[in-house]
Image (cartoon, rainbow, N blue to C red):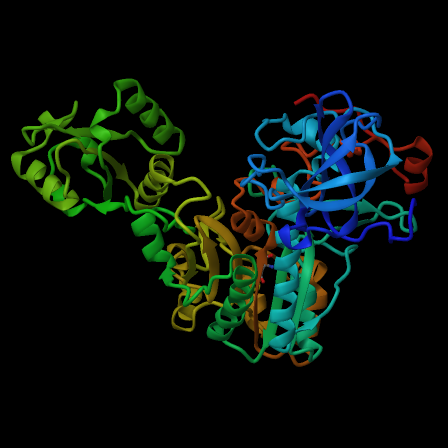
Length: 583
Ligand code: ASP
């Protein structure tokens, strides 16, 4: 160091006109160098707070991304050279002494927000990518969210408890990641899909209110909102009902929103699962926009048109959609079929109020009039109609609605929604065993418990559960439920799911055993922090808010995981590899 100042007295992005006249030392990376005549160069120095322009004697060998310390005097930029787009744009550092702390190879890509860089290149050099404003901002949003969630849970009397990573399998319905055991060759640990069973055991253990910012691992295909490993705010409480869970989770989410945006969340609206499906065709409705599903079954109750002789008919009204070309309509029809529809009927509303559609001639005048009145369609609109069983109709129209209306992530604000009264089962499997919609520890709705004893398996599908989801802008943020705390009901549930007593004992015996020793009524919730942070940061993909994510194919281009291991390591674990499958 060239003088008695500490290595750094200030941060680059914090210098203002009020600092003029001070001699400061800043440290960071050379973002840009512009020559100014033969002897002077302008250096933009970058740290995590932003940029400061430094006027430096041109003789220095300063290249992009060199790590330097610059000591200089804060002075006003000459008239006409101020930069209003930069927080430090009124000032610069003059009379600079430069100390090169480290040289750097030319960066693998330009660190400029305006330049689109291939994601593989970014991830392979994530340590450079992390220097960008975007990543600096996103990771700081993430840290704020974590901090505020922790404070909110602490303040509400929750105890932070860490549950183990090497466990027996948890039943969240995804594939486990497994870890071979060296000491018990042939045996495996599973990595937790969630801390579900442990948090329930904490309740049996009298912890009363538990939370954890928990890492969960699920071996599922990766998507924009899904990575193999993700973080969730996981919570459980004893002697509470659904109401209290919704309340303490709302408090935590509101704290995170306030911390990042400064805005108050207000009351989060609620919708039943049934209403969500009927109106939006989804159990995670994006309520930032309308284009709701319109019930048309009564309009076609007596139709002669075969394709509309179905138990459910619904439609979408796409304002201005009459302009869609034939090939766009064909494409939408193909998609609808891929999503499970038998077909998609489209109708353009013409200037004269007539419907332009290949099927119009099969409909009666009353049906056409009923259609126009029910949908409120006007000239220039497009109607899209699906007829089938109710779940299929809602599903397909729900996806079409998103396809045609979903705003970009940065528009429409933050629309949170509680979806309540989920069904206990989502379908029946080939053996008529119901498949749980949440996990098998979810308490049925008190009014529907009797249906579990019905001889008709279809009745099982009518059972509501005490399960609830939190949705934000069409993303499922998280779910939770009131749990079954009585061994007898839990056993009944397992038997309904086709899990024999022996299997139940083998997989979850420890939980069933624990329930015999005084399990309090309890309920809980968990929501994905990556998803919440992404939406708060205005990002479409959670990879943008994770320091070291995997690519879509599950690889880490930086560390090259997953990678092969040494034969000796395999030997020690008692493993032998089969030839790689080529499917
Ligand atoms: N364990 C559940 C999950 O990870 C959340 C819960 O029911 O608390 O989705």
